[in-house]
Length: 163
Image (tube, rainbow, N blue to C red; front, side):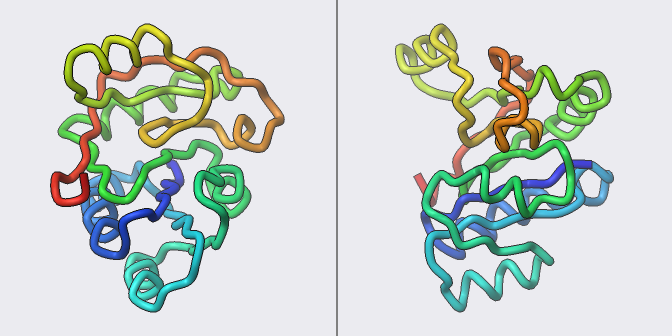
């Protein structure tokens, strides 16, 4: 099982879209819990998180490590609100987790981008954790240094309503 970390930048509607896309993974036994990362408490956001049974952590933007401290699982899927994993992602992540050791530490889902931007992203992949990455908790807590990310065949896209 994994914990999903969701950074909130667009608000409760985008968070709800991402959380609803995770329901099949919960039913399949891949996702065990969720941690919502926000830079401020907001009533509507808290209601969405509460309805999903998610933990809310107030931290500065991009504070994946704060989410790792609150996570209950070792493998963490980092997402931004509005991210929607595409068909087949559950099987791909489940297989990666089953076959990987913490020392590998980092795997990256594909994002569909146009032309040059996509080519440069693929060519100059770095070990900095970003949305769409599956990362071992020990990497975020600086206990293990991540290797170059493994490219997963799973795809993630942004909900068009949230850019």
